[in-house]
Length: 171
Image (cartoon, rainbow, N blue to C red; front, side, top):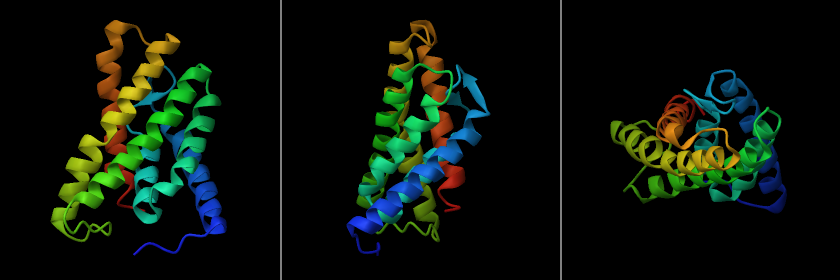
C-alpha cells in the first residue's frame, strides 16, 4: 500500500523525484549517441517508473521538472527539453497505470510473473510514449533529419526500456 498523501509529502516526493531524475539523467547523458539527448541506457526512466509505482501519478511534476532541467542544461534546443518534459512523465504514468492493471502485480518484483510484467508492459510498451514524443521534439527542433527518425526512435525506446529494467528494480 502506498503512503498517505498530503500536500507536504507530495511536494517532498516531487522535489526528491526531480532531483533523482536530474542526477540520473546527467549520468545517462554521458552515454548520448544521437545529438546530446538520446542514449543507449536512460536511467531516469527507471527512477520515474519506480516513483510512479511507489507514490502514484501525482509525482509526474517531479519527473517533468527533472526531465526539463536535465535537457535544458545541455546544448540541445529548448524545444527538445519541453518535448522531453512531456514525454518522459507520460511514459512513467503509462507504465504505472498499465502495471496496476496487470492482475495482482507486485512492485516488489519478488515473483517471476511481476518481472515479466515489468519487462513486457513497463519496459516494452510504456517507452513508446516517451520515444514518440521525444523524437517528435528532435524532428521539430531540427536535431534529427526525417531519414534518421526511425533509428533515433528505436535508440530512444531501447534506452528508456533498459533504464526501466536496470534501475526500477533497484529502487
